[in-house]
Length: 189
Image (cartoon, rainbow, N blue to C red):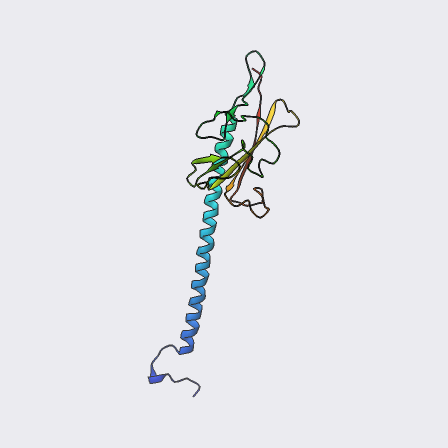
């Protein structure tokens, strides 16, 4: 008497059981869709962070490649004219290893910024990015306070164009931003 009789005596699922199973399946599909969305966004941010790190490394190598040492006669040798805002090689008419003005990592100061496209190709320089720019690359050059005549501190920040909005700046803790710091010291001949 306590058993339920199924229509026509068939051994199958009741309408209630089917509805519960469909609700569980729908919940699983929604959870998987959210998982794919989160994974896709994380993958994109990771790719952007890797590209930013590579672009920062390239600029750091370019800065380290500029002359900063002593001539054979013992006088200081400083490249103060190379333009590291152009690509692929440093051209003339730039600031070279001249000390940067304050705030060059936080705003696009001509002479200390360039722009790169999605493929890592240089697309320009100046106070505002050209339309093809996907990344902003800024750098600063400062003397080391303990040894200002012999040691320079280089900082390079790279981030996706548009991510500096909202007051967070390039150092806002995002993991799709690259910030490298290095030093270069004069060596006696």
